[in-house]
Length: 147
Image (cartoon, rainbow, N blue to C red):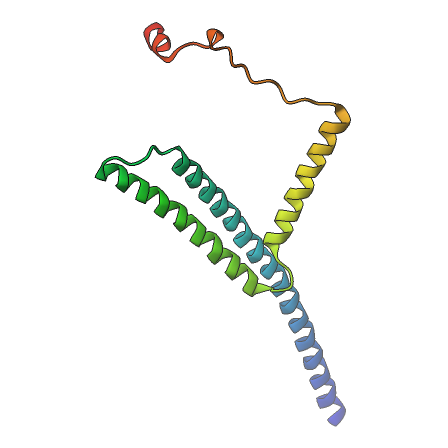
């Protein structure tokens, strides 16, 4: 009778150990998925921040209250994108402080850029020159007139 009880307890204990191992492995997978999701959001936020910074640099010096409002809105949008990037970076870091998906993605991007540069150097590829000859380009006023 005791052998049966100890056998059942052993089987239950083994089942629990297998279940715990499966849960831990699945948890690790989900953790990485969540980290890369947050890293993707971070990358998008950084791109939006740069886009708003570019927009701000194109603004003329404000001369009217409306111009000031537009400038303030652009700065606010840039700051909001920066805040979102910082928040996702902080959240991603709390999941696994030792392994950062954001840093991994940045390293991979750097490798891709370096590889592209290496390919350009080996192949002798040169960036195509940008045409400054406007005579071959249609003027906007002429384009509207001919349309």
